[in-house]
Image 1 (spheres, one colour):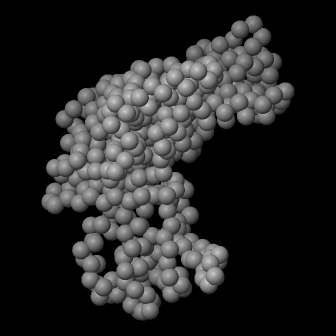
Image 2 (cartoon, one colour):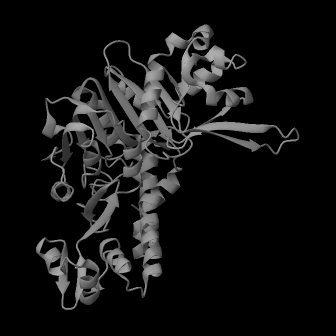
Length: 435
């Protein structure tokens, strides 16, 4: 919600300048929240009247102009109303954005009885969870967020989402859920002023608190998916802080780390909005953040999702570095990775892999690129059209066998010339399934 957002807005503003078509008028009104003429608004909104929006508190009319008080976005079959684009406001409520999309794509979409959305904002994650949950509770400390989420629930005809205002898990004390999803204010910063960005805790305390406390609110077999940033030392493994947080939690953990920024770029990105007031406020803020990092011994910041599953017994932790971003609904791949880790010991023996009936995951595609080396050997990778964001290199032998892996025959029958370690690796990444 920093510099890129402002730049994008300015780019759209320039493209729409002088355009009075209905589409341009609606974009100016509800995406850029600019004033438009009353005449243009009436034409673009027909059969709705601008006065109807004003009566609902969604717009203001001043003489011959109309200004929207909200932003409106179409997202995954939903129409979502969010706050005007003012990231400097403490109570700012964001609409659909890249962070929300990443959470939405990684969430496991299995049918559940109960779900919890922590830090619901305008309600995006709660409404998506409502499609596969009997009942969803959405929590936010921000009163405006609860109001907007309530409006959006009515706007989209969603009746199985219950809104509760309060501080994080306090409103659901003593309750248990099959799914917890959270896209919290996870930015590692010295500030607490902006609820949507910093929350009420400094540094990575919000991420730590949610990862530490969420397990107590899970049903057996329940899953919590928390997006977050966390600090670590330059020579410290990025997974180490999270492993400490979840020790003794009674949960298995899949840790997904995505590409992040160096500290200077991170601080600059989250303070980019200050450039509107000139370079000096921006530079001062970046310096203040970097001074804070030095004082706290923060040398690197990890960006990722922590996936926890409540399970009695000896729990496991698996950490995976993802070089890209989710390319579509990836919840099934996340679930396959969890299931593959559960069955790791079962397939530790090569003979067990040879005798297993394996199938390619839906949407698996093979790409082959010529190498620029002297030998000119081709490089073959496999990845999902809609997946978490990584590919895996495979041998030519396995690439040829993949179309025939449909679960009807054993791996040995289909790919006798392929090393079992290759299949084991693709299973662990959710690119193959065990039938």
